[in-house]
Structure formats: structure tokens, C-alpha cells
Image (cartoon, rainbow, N blue to C red):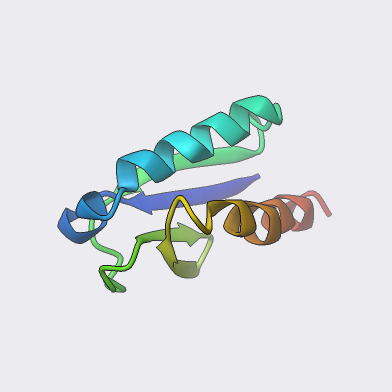
Length: 87
């Protein structure tokens, strides 16, 4: 199981955090990962870059997540974290 915090603070809100939350929810549902991913919203993760949304998985913070790079983030980062958590 992995724990994800999606920033919904001012900067991330303006760069599409609501859209990233929706994309994550869709992937979790589509891939039947409801028991593997715990999502929550949080305020500033301290990594604002105005080029996308910040997401924390465990202790690692990823920045600049957008609709355009979401697929790569999901496949390389989120799915890897889920697989590693199952070991």
C-alpha cells in the first residue's frame, strides 16, 4: 500500500491539482487499486514551482505533475511504488 498526498494549496490549485486528483482517481479505479493507494489532499509541500502539481509518495516529493506528463508519472513512479510496496 502506498500513501499519496496531493497538494491542493494555492499554487498547485492554480496549476491543476483538481485535474491531477481526478486523473489519479480514474487510474486507481480503472486498475482496481483501491486497496493499494491511499490518497489525501494536503496544503503546501514546500516545493512550489508553478509548473505543475506537487505529489508526495511516502517521503519522496515529486513536482511539476501536469496532465501532459501524468502518464509517465503514473507508470514510472506510482506503479513502481505500488509494486515495491507489495514486496
